[in-house]
Length: 385
Image 1 (tube, rainbow, N blue to C red):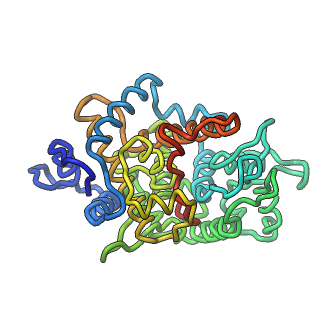
Image 2 (tube, rainbow, N blue to C red; image 1 turned 90 degrees about the horizontal axis):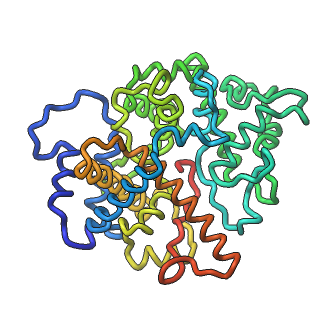
């Protein structure tokens, strides 16, 4: 649904991207089903809308800013906490990270929320997880040796890897425990069993099973690992969102710069990764708008249950919106090497920068944004994102 005048050019691009009304040959490569699901959600949404005017303006802004920053996959590798080696150990690290990459939001203030101390500073959100893993690999103070936390066979052996050790690995520098810690431990145990039974306990074997197809690897993850099967029902049909399965592929592609473990011939089949930060940023940019009941609910910081129609609309329309942003950029700049992955990474980074800016303003008595307090992110406790 749209909240303003329909843009024929954007609708043409949308239909073309989905193979509707075109004479192009059928692509024989695997299909994750995520874009088709996003279109179904978009067409049946009553509480979340995509602004065509907002999409045009945001696409121009994003392209300009990404060009100014020379934004590329190098942004992933440049972060001090991300691994730098081009080997199987990095693939293991990425798999472990994306196996546990969900639900870091807190109801507490910035000083009290879950945080991890590493390399002389405190890390929160996604970076708290990465810091936990890096700290464990360096850890010799308690257990007398480094902890091979990114080795899947280690998770399966509860004698060597008891819950008490995992609580130590994911320990907090504050009074708040890592959110959904029990669920994270369950994901590690489950994944180690699946890898052992189907992929010789090897992430490298798992990756190779997809024969360098991004979509195939997403489908393998969803079919083989229950904790990656981010699939729901909305308005009479199954919808596939598959956030963490897709981000695993994207992180491999970024970490290995499209080579080796990160070589995928169909990387552009990957959509954005539907979470709670990117929809928030898309709302701030004027791309997404919410119905009054949903907006009031989010502003009141009330939780939305996982699988609720509101949550599905937020996630599905975010996927659709980023697809339209990508198409609009390519329409205006045909040579642009920008896909949904890079747009998602950029929007997430921008959302975190915005969060830090707003926190500084609050500390010094400033306003939350133009015209008053900005829309918070929606709150859903879930292993899916």
